[in-house]
Length: 215
Image (cartoon, rainbow, N blue to C red; front, top):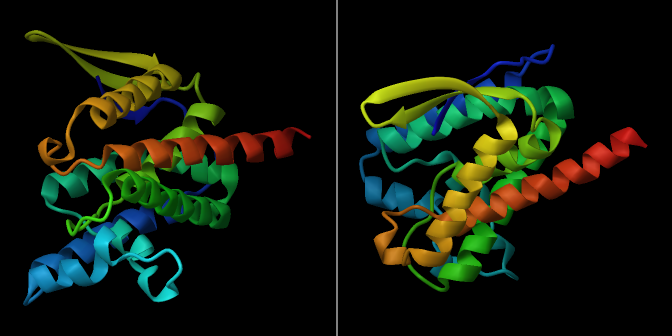
């Protein structure tokens, strides 16, 4: 199943969500324009072998890598998911808190990926870990929101509204299967554990903030 749009739109702006997508596009333009693309990627991506937990000078790529993308499909798919699930979470959290939690989920996602892949020299890049945090938070806040979803049934395309909780559980299940059963070299560059870490971080942040709001 593939999500297309959220049937429920909360009132208010979602400027940070759209600014993040604009930043993705701009940084991707910088990638395409770079004289030395390999050096550009190595400078701003997160290379586990270069990361040192107790050396702050190696921490910047934890954030900068979140704005890089490995190709048009990578860019468009990340922007698509953020534009579907980001606006309502930004409206629920407020723009500043949304940005902080978004980046924080991205950092947590990268750290979990490093923990599982080890000390390798393959660059990590992309916004999917941070966006997974948005998905995890959405799962807690709005599980009953209907998501317009494309479900391929053989040669018959089905378009149906499915509760966000089901869509996101399906997505998370795919990440668990990928992380547990697909070898890193066969994953096609998909950072499954980053997705898992980001999603769980979003769940924790959402539970904490939702409980605080209720109280």
